Amino acid sequence: MKAITLNSVVPMRTSPHEQAEMCSQVLFAETMTILKEEGAWAKIQLDADGYEGWVDRKMISALSDEAYNEIKDAPKSAIAFPVALAMSAENQTTLLLSGGTKVPNYKNGSFELLGVKFNIDPSTVLPQGTTFDSAKVTNIARFFVNTPYLWGGRNALGIDCSGFVQMIYGIFGIQLPRDASQQVNHGRVVDFLTEAKAGDLAFFENADKKIIHVGMMLDNENIMHASGRVKINKIDAQGIVSEIDGTHTHRLRIIKRIHE
Image 1 (tube, rainbow, N blue to C red):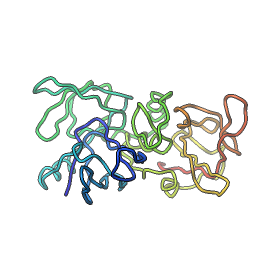
Image 2 (image 1 turned 90 degrees about the vertical axis):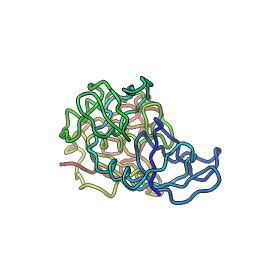
Image 3 (image 1 turned 60 degrees about the vertical axis):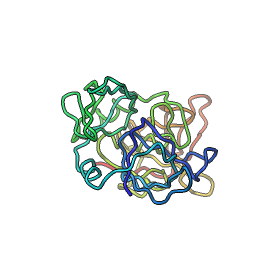
Image 4 (image 1 turned 180 degrees about the horizontal axis):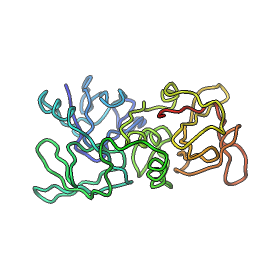
């Protein structure tokens, strides 16, 4: 069964319990497959990145095949500002949308979903097909500086390291996997830090050589990443340099170029 959420954000959990760890989030208008149901919970798989988890059943709505295909095939633009306010043209109710949210059928300050038209400030939306380039990527990414860190978070009120880079790339219509350990398998290797450019992804390892962190390069000396909060740090061949005491907080493993 296919479904959608019409909520701004829905927590996705590792098991069907309120106390379970939040592993990710579902954003407004994201579609999914319901894999199974257990009491008040549904195990879902997101269409966009294939991620699986449990959500409160009442926070998602079933879709007919016709409605699902309509949404799937609709052109989608992205919220490119930390938050945006959408207003129903029918009854003037408002909906808070987070950066990275994809809105279908956007045109000239409005979008339409399941027959409902919403008005939205066009300055907060990046139209579908916008070119991925260094200037645009860094300008948009800087809007999210100081977003607090939240394990499993995918929105501007709380985000984790892989959620941050997935969101920035998603704004430009490039779908990355959810976790850093999956993202590292994409793109081509940048051989030297001096060759890194804005938009490249840097991956970091722990003592067991497992990928545990990711950030986005702003140039070959600075990186933006979510650690405590979204921030900008210096980076060298060893890793990320603390702004407090100059020590290395994350050990660099590899830099990948996802988009040429």
